[in-house]
Length: 500
Image 1 (spheres, rainbow, N blue to C red):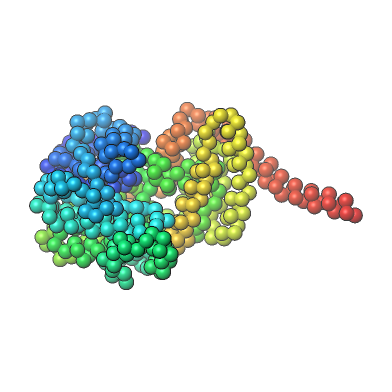
Image 2: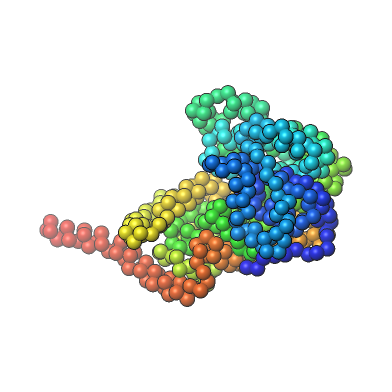
């Protein structure tokens, strides 16, 4: 998993971002952290990158920057070009607060210095309370646009949305869809109605929307449509963002990425079911491609804005060009795990995909007593074991994403393909987001290896022992299943004998 350097000669996109000052919201999140790393590595001639970071848990913004840079994703830069990290600077702010909670000095700094904005920040919790989702996803976008209107030399503003902002439609084009709700009314409600009352009203307000995340991201897009006129704005809509395919290291995995954590828990035998239709397409995109597309979109709008009549939208999806079904995804992951099992495995890897929720719950219930035994054993051995905690976290995640895993959409991506066709050959190499170039088995192999190394902390030197362990756990599985089946039959037989 070698760190990927960039070419020395500047490409068109690299030249565009050279000597520009960039503001990024959501930089400490999953997608945001990759965006920062990519810009520093592939566009090292940027003048400065401001990160809007809020103080959190008794840590000021500077402490959070140090924590952010301590992530292993930045190790390659620390070794190859550590001086470029000095181009990062923190601006203390909070998307949930009016005017982003900025001081007058920091706002003036943004107005006078910033040229490019990447608005990645959002609350991505599907179960987020409506009030907070409105204030962050809608109110934060509103505040940022108001500040952007004051910027003296704004070249581009990339708003990162989601393909599921249109999840109430079976077909989603790269276009605006006007919602029934008005963003100003929702912001007013969030600021005037009590949290308790708003929680009671949430089901009525959401209507056919499955969660507060997709609902508020949809409204935020309409806000961009109404208030973004006159600004060099663009919207990018990635689908389900997962581990990187190529860079900075292939298959890099993080526990912040719940899809990688899901793979990890399946591979060690903690999670055994997934509510989904195996015949449906699961729309997955690697985070490095997602970031590259956002960077390219910023370049395109900066170059073409004077000739644009409307705000462009780019659906970044895999379904139309390189689809993979849930069933095929299950098969490729099984092959990958079989070739590279983990020595952290506690049960035989078995996962059932289907839409019969009662059957799936029964399978999970089957393994639950065994997990309690494993946790009890770890407690008496003085070890910290998170089997049950992780199991609950992933089961909750699986339940809230059932709206996506049990349904299939068709996302159009003509604008994204046109964007790709605009790129010169050098830019296609440095900022690749060609979905057709992904081989799903290769990707699965890389994810499995990344999960093993970075989430499970399982060195490759244990592969031999892991294969032996896998064989033993498979045999144990047969014995346990037999016991579950035969023991009740034996008890019934004995009771029948006693009664007779």
